[in-house]
Length: 329
Image (tube, rainbow, N blue to C red; front, side, top):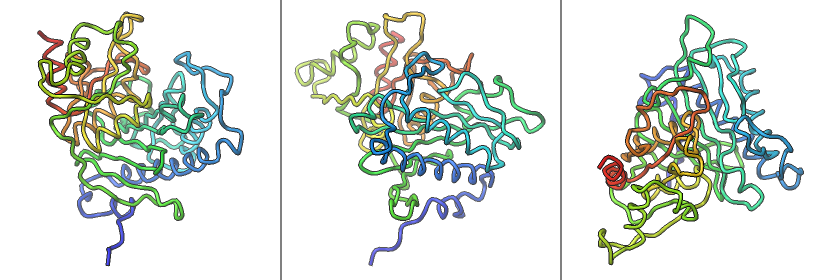
C-alpha cells in the first residue's frame, strides 16, 4: 500500500526545519495558499473574461494582461492577513509596499511570469523571493537591494497541466504538486538535482544576430552538434515563459539563456534581477546547477535599483562554466 504523501504544511513542520524561523515557514505557507487562489482564477480565466489586455502598462512600460493585474492584487492583499511581512515589492509596481503590521521579512515577486502565453494555454507561473528585513525600523526601497546570496527562501508556482510549487529554504530544492480537490500541495520530489552535463539548450534563436560573440560561439557549437567542436548533438527548447523553461531544467537538466543583445545596449539584459534572476538562480544552485550573467555569479550581484535588469545563463554547471569561459577569454 502506498503511504500518504506529505503535505506542504507537514513538510514545513518537520524536524529537518526546526532551525528555520517559524515566521519564515508561515510566510511560505501563506504564499503557497495565495498561489492556489491565483491558480483557480487562471483555470476560470476564459469563462470569467479575465483573458486579454488590461489596457494598462506596468512600471517596465509593458502591456499588462488582466491576469497580471489580478495576480498582483491577490499577492498584495495577502499582507492584510499575515504578520510576517515588513514589506513587498512587485515587478508590476513602481516602488515598494510597507506592511501594515511590519514583520521580519521582505517579499519580492513576479506575480505572473510568461503572461504573454495566457491566451494560448501555455504554462505560466508566479516567482517569489524572500529576504530578511531590519527589525529596528520600517523598510525602505534600499533595504530590498540585497545580493541574491542573502535570500532566505525562493520558489515558484507553475500553472500548467499540473500546478506545481518548487521551493528552496537553502536546504536543497523540493517540489510539491497541487491536489486540485483539496487545494493542498503534496510533496512529490524532495531532492531535485540538475545533471552537470546536458545536450539541451533553451534560447530564442530569432535574436542570434543581436547577441555578443561569446553567446554566438556557444550556440553555434551546439547547433554544429556531433560534427562540431562538442562532438555531440544538442536539442533546442524555447517556451518563452521563464518559469516553464527553468522548470524543465530542474526536472531533467539543460541550460537556459536570456543574454544581453545589441538592440538595447544600455540594458544589461531583459530579465529582472530581483524578481526573476535571483530566485531562479537560488533554486538552480540549490539543485546543483550554476547561474551567471556571463562573467559573474548572479547571486553575487549587488543591486543598484529595484527593477534592475540582467543577462541570465543558468542550468547544468558544466555548460554554464563553458559559457563563462567564453566570456572571460
